[in-house]
Length: 191
Image (cartoon, rainbow, N blue to C red; front, side, top):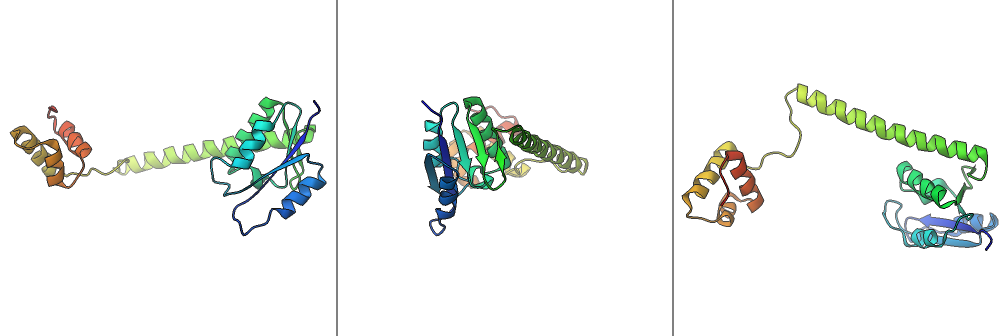
């Protein structure tokens, strides 16, 4: 079986037209064109999923523009890595990226490195921000629902054995999980 060129086009809303992308993909010699009318932020896109199911080693995926394929740089890198593992080539017409050429492979590898660099920077900035907040006495995480006084009241009610955990939750205007958390915080053993 000979290799095929698969085109993929995507627009975000039904008010947008696929014609420009479809015409460019047809002109590029695509044998089949898959399309989606869905936001790029969606995890699953039916047209893309169908195309991926059809791909075989030696095939080529062609897009009009990179942002039509991936939701983010990270998503693009994941898709390109999957294509590479499958033995599938990739072309982006607008950015002139073609992994069938050494230059195209170089450009893609640079994108992958930049995506990793961006993830590392975000991680570093997050850690630095958390450390700075801790140094100023701030503690991260979700705020405590019940005050120390309310936790003591939960414990008193619980230890009285006259009300259930559900009734305590209703009295304190919280959920039963919050009551159990308060009991652990106060050192009481749960019944």
